[in-house]
Image (cartoon, rainbow over all chains, first blue to last red; front, side, top):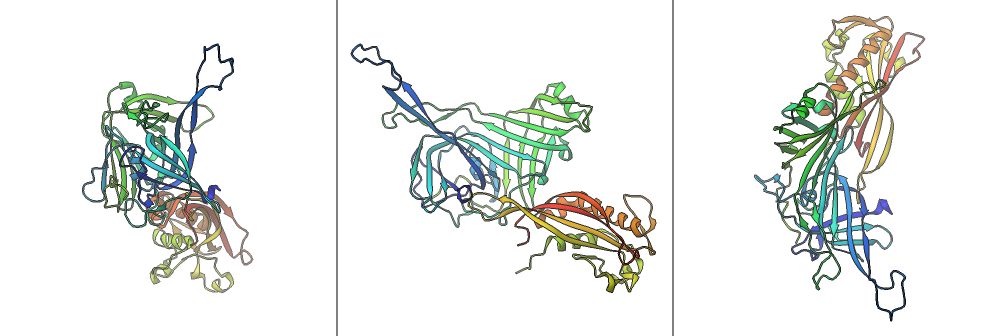
Length: 319
Length: 169
């Protein structure tokens, strides 16, 4: 059924309330949705002699925690931006996204295709983590770790939006995903594009997800609270010089850092200053040729600029 | 509607512009010398000025799988054979890798032309082929061939691959 699957999503106007729009949005070329759903069993111990049991699960309460990880090839940033912040589009078609203090909640559906599709619908979703990763010779992929308040099985999968440019389905021919070969990379203004083999850029929102004490919500989780966001990058390069190692040894903040992908007149860039190289690892092996250098960067904040044909602000809600 | 070109047509067109035709007589006439198919040797060998020449032939396309959920597009890999053909006894000057021009014939001339094609594709595919949805140029091997037409024509080639979407559509 995997090849008949589908994924869509829509922003919620109130946390946990399903967007009523008849058509939902296209997240990109989604390749994998991994459920992470659990029912936490809360045993209720009994010291009442009139209840003559000592076995577990006779008395219990369930506190569900739902969620999933969604991965795919990146065509544009609207879906991943839900886990980063608002879009300050200026001018039209240039989407400027910076980490925000609040995150929008959304609903999402996964269709497992069959004669009668099986559709999972998560509501009250919020992104725990957003990751962009790319390897040499491969596509730029997004991965979002998502917390959800509720999971239900429903009868019908919402159609994809057909016309609104930030929401509609794009074939690869209409908007091709970015690839590693589209990339240029600068650390401290040093162009390391030719030597980069792998990049993983991560925003961890450190969501506080707790069971609710609200009767209207019951045992489900309440609206998550984004805590201190942690931005980081793992960069793997073929070692060409001592430049990056010297930056690590100096232990000072590094400005002029850029991860950028260019696709014709479109581009996606992540620019950041004040980064610290917190780890510099490499294994020198007499059996190997090129020395591979692995760097971990701690990043205070960033500006993500997504330039494409979409003239509608990413914050526009499905209606 | 613009007719879509095959990968072998795209690569042929690029090589035709990127590599200087070593046959100075033909070059003066601005005649084609890189083709997206195998040459008809018996017919063409009647005139030595039809050589050297380069052919680009598709030798296989395989699909890696669907590009994403609810998408009918596939991620494909195409393998092409790029071959140079030259008369054993016709020598022409070629330049490879910034060296001084050398006058070569037969197998040596073919190898030099294939090396030129490889250097061009290796250094330029990011800008030259990506607009045509062909990514990640890889040279997968080089191949000497048996002589053609009783040893009068030599042939040397390389196999290359590109990743793309809906290759062949």
